[in-house]
Length: 385
Image 1 (tube, rainbow, N blue to C red):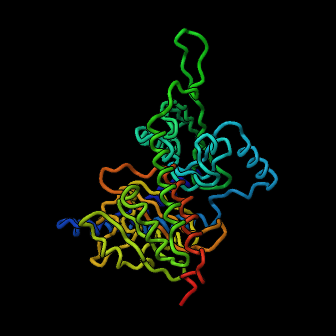
Image 2: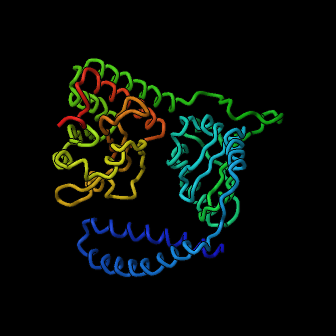
Image 3: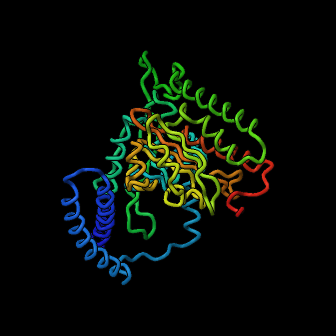
């Protein structure tokens, strides 16, 4: 049974690698086309043979696992959420599936914000590779692990991350349970350990970044309050002007949801701004997902070059713009309200990637932008002919 489930996981990973190879054909390399065509042909052949076999085994019930008792499920869920220790459940790629209340307060993430995003986004860059590697090893069944990491919000305080494999219910994939505990250091006098959360000096770097976010929020508020009422495109243009270039190298604004139109594109000098402006928002998967009411998306070193579509020349926009990190947020005034538009931000080159704290700041500003767009407006752009 375990071997069959492991076989299924390997097949799923293999199919994803096939998709990555297909997207690699867009890279402008003269002598790569023939090699990639042959590789894709062979990989497709294997995937077409192995994947249907696994699906047939799953359909026959060989994966097993009945539905657990609902009362027990509710009890376990309550225990997980109320556990006083910071605990998160992640997949083999360190993406958060569940995070309890203690972990949310510990990391500074708003409730529900971390789900679907890599837990490594909360860590210092120096710790991310090691954490991803250890998480993948635990998910492969190579035993529990423990390592020291540091949060971005408090980089001088060491944390002990304990990783253990967990099989939730009848799911075929192994998850990883992460427990975060503050480290301790002995006192200089040889006395009892000191609580490492009592930092001896303020984190000036974090204070500076926080001040920059506050200045950005102030500038955005000023721009939105002085924008003409009812001018939806004007509001988007003002918001984009605040964010570019102080916060993002590229700012792309799309108005509406059901029938989107691209209103503003700001980018670096000599960048293909015109090509991105001419691109149809419906051809951008990230924009389409956000317009349908999806959650904000934060990606560092985007793996899928086609996630923002292609320009008129057929080249992926993310490749041509040399994007190293991106934010894509829907614009809506209420969590259950309609989407008024989509705002996408790119960073490129040597600029630091977007952090979780910056993503949260943009998420807050997106609600204010949506409220400014609907102030005095006669209707949503997506509802007008």
